[in-house]
Length: 241
Image (tube, rainbow, N blue to C red):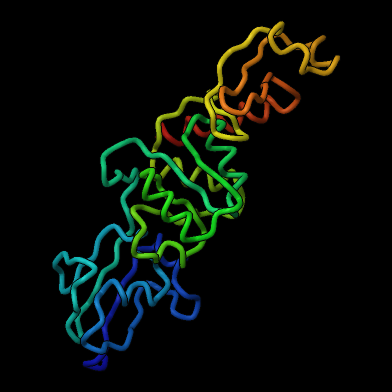
């Protein structure tokens, strides 16, 4: 190994985030003597919010550490479940590409804010102001230094993504209590209160209803209820393990 190189070792769970040409258990990178360890790690594709700890020469260090030439660096993934910096139960903000995940999180009762018209600076500003974990599959967004707390969502399908987020943050679940459309809280309503909003088939076959306190949307156990129950049951198993 050249004396101007670093040996950087990544936990298995972080390797999928690395740039493809550098992906592996250990990579050797040129060392300029001035870059911080955090800069080195992110230059290899891994955002710092995905890093749970760093060691250099066998001792724990901060991302601001300037490694020595020839030093062996280890990059560890965050432990699960991941506690938040403020110690509070997690609340989420999802980027524009994760609308389906937002609906699933709301289905199981997680506080999941989502809008499809926010750019990156607005997402960071809102996540910080409301102390929400910013969920995204955009590594560049996670590298923004101003971000309070963020997480890269694993999985390409919404069910896989839901499992990943619940496994990582273990939020308290309260299924069927949130509006999947707007994140508002649901409240029971009588059939008589909302009968004028129902089509004839629903009026004839359904008796139990809830309504969003914010947007007014009405819910009942419809044709897809069994599938939704399966999602809720799988979520409960994920958080319990």
